[in-house]
Length: 199
Image (cartoon, rainbow, N blue to C red; front, side, top):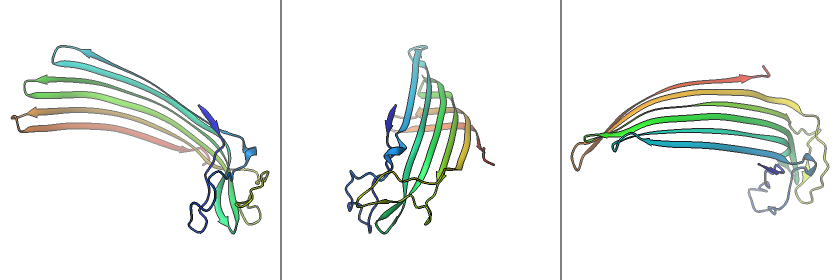
């Protein structure tokens, strides 16, 4: 977990990316910090069935989110940087798992397995674009903070889900000391839904 001001860096002036010191901040300190959180837990196990065969399994779980306000660069007009105001609220959760049988049968090295994952991702974004009447601008030479953008408007409100299951099998055949042949098959069942909650 970490909190930091959302900083898009500095704009290139007349194509020169080094024209402005990189320490210069063009967001709004009053926007506060954006919180980023990403947690992952993973467990893997292996069981030896015999000297030639083993079973491997694994499970992983991840959650994450990002939330906060920012004043992002939109475009440079003269020496004024017009900015876009945003509020982000993103979250993700996914679970994945795998189980695989691996072993040797004579000159054949075989793998058979199944794996799958689920994903649940939400993306909520409010945004206000700059206009000539309300540019939410800041000077690139002498930034003065405290600018106020117009109230935020709904922009993105999506929820995505994915469900994937994969079956696979592979045979590595050592035909001779100098020739190996590899054959495999894989079947994926992939289902994805993206729902626009605004419409």
